[in-house]
Image (cartoon, rainbow, N blue to C red; front, side, top):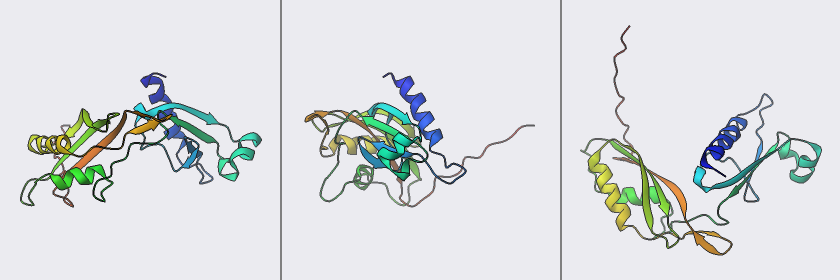
Length: 184
């Protein structure tokens, strides 16, 4: 399935995920497991999406939770990639802890798309946002020096998968609001 078709299907699925007048959402099923949504899944990891209507057959199969329909998502992998290092399982938090960024330094944010390779190494595929070149360089260095992940698995074979890394430092601080001038 091409990326553009997947983007359209994901958009439709996200549109369908809005609460209906009755206050219910469709049921999400990801790789055979019930899920709360699919907004967190990178497009590259989605192999297919099927939307099942809220008919008798669907409700008989999935129960009353399917009364608004079912969105069935098949991922490229059976088991997602996992980052586990010394009790830390959140990769963004791990990388942030390795970056030296003093409290007196300006608030900065970096968002990256990364690829977890079959051998567990990480490759940066895209810089989505960087408000500071200095923070970006430090985050990239921390990623280069980070421990390996457990790769995603499909049919017993390690495969590549994609993830997002979002870091804002110093922690707990807000980015300043950009000011603009509106000309009439």
